Length: 116
Length: 107
Image 1 (cartoon, each protein chain N blue to C red):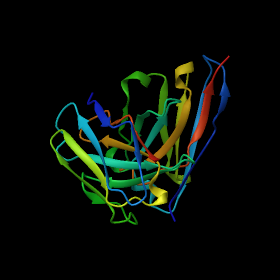
Image 2 (tube, rainbow over the protein chains, first blue to last red):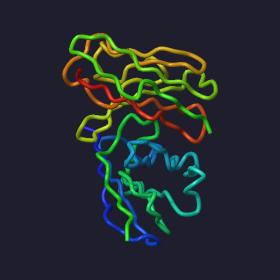
Image 3 (cartoon, rainbow over the protein chains, first blue to last red):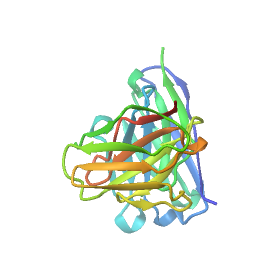
């Protein structure tokens, strides 16, 4: 059974940082491309970042509006993907999901609240 | 960026009814259009990929069609578990973008 489990969310003050983790199982992680998506309080879904696999040199793509603040990374030995979020803003408040590259599997999501 | 416009945003319907949700892109997608269902508990389930291909385990009452900029999701006969949010998403070009969602509600 494929599983994606996000952790690391919580309440953080504006300007601070947070690192989300997504632990996976049930598929060959090392050859999978992975994404981070978020859902805003208004229910809008927004793709944030994608990381490809080793054969594609771990090529990374970002949504322009988060480039420079968010960093996606992966650890194939742990079958995990990460999202480092720096200089957080109130508009980053959302539920964050990790997905496989083709969006055929999603985690349950983790809540991030940015508020003073 | 490709803008995705879904309609309607809210759709009241009855059990057994046939419903259609539309999705219009700001430019052609070459059929690179996917559909997702979000259940009330927040779980997101992929339904259809590449316009009309059902994901594994998705009931045959779901179908997708379209081309160019206009796509649709049809549920042929609504079951209780179908009342949820539905989103379209394009993966024709970066950044991948989603429609604003359609809330399918029990009338």
